[in-house]
Image 1: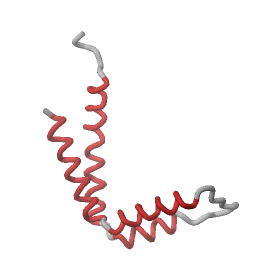
Image 2 (image 1 turned 120 degrees about the vertical axis):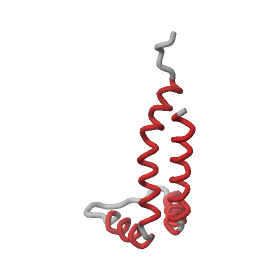
Image 3 (image 1 turned 90 degrees about the vertical axis):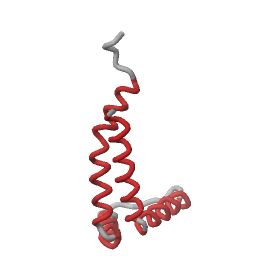
Length: 94
């Protein structure tokens, strides 16, 4: 019974491995300016070919509204990621 792998042990291992990446993303959000992110989104969002058909435009508008809200607050989101990563490391290492 001592060598069984539980779901909580697997989740703990995954969270321990993911937390450094969350920390790195938080640092990148603190360093990167919102203008760079908006320009990157516009460049990657260009449609190369084909017909774009919107099935549910109201949901798509809401998604972009939330994304734009987050982009304007990259400093706060970056701090949240750093604090979250530190809490994960402190709680799960013990």
